[in-house]
Image (cartoon, rainbow, N blue to C red; front, side):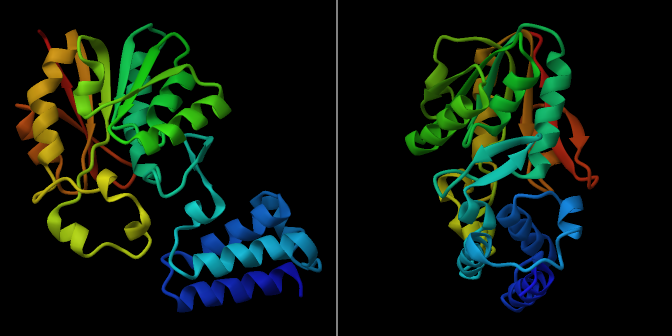
Length: 273
């Protein structure tokens, strides 16, 4: 068969299985199997598709059809232009979270602050900040030892100077003070957890569930963050769709920033003392 024929068949099977974006995912698998980009793929669609590349693509397709996220199937995802290893131990970084990361980077600029990536998961936010802001001293914490194993590996592979710490929220950084804290906490509510999309159900519940109303972690961060920020320090909190106003209220007021879709995604709070 040709690459085009495989692509057509893969797209059809993914669509029949209810995959949210069969066209994009089938193309990603084919590009990875052939080790080419989108532009180069167009020039190879009429080539015979066989041997190890076909075997890899077909293996990915069959596993993807079980409902396992493609990022876990292939073992990586892209975030802020960097390739991150991911598996079932960590939440898959979303493009929405790039808003949090870009805002943190813009606030740091060329400075040399102490930065904390709270609830780091795969390490995507903290590592991306460290790579973009060479002067920053970046720390990343998580309650999950398994997640930290993945984050440390990502830090090593990407050459990022990040200190990883284990603990429940601020328990990992007792006695420390930061100039900026960025956090993407678990924020799905009980109803969300009962009706998870098939793919999302493969992700760790620890990184998803934010309590009955999805705001449990925001309440804790709002209560505790001030003790870990220097005067003038900045807290950046990612919020789920429809949660931003509630998060801002918990913080006693905050500036809200929208993602590319126009959804309020990040609450920004500066602490004067």
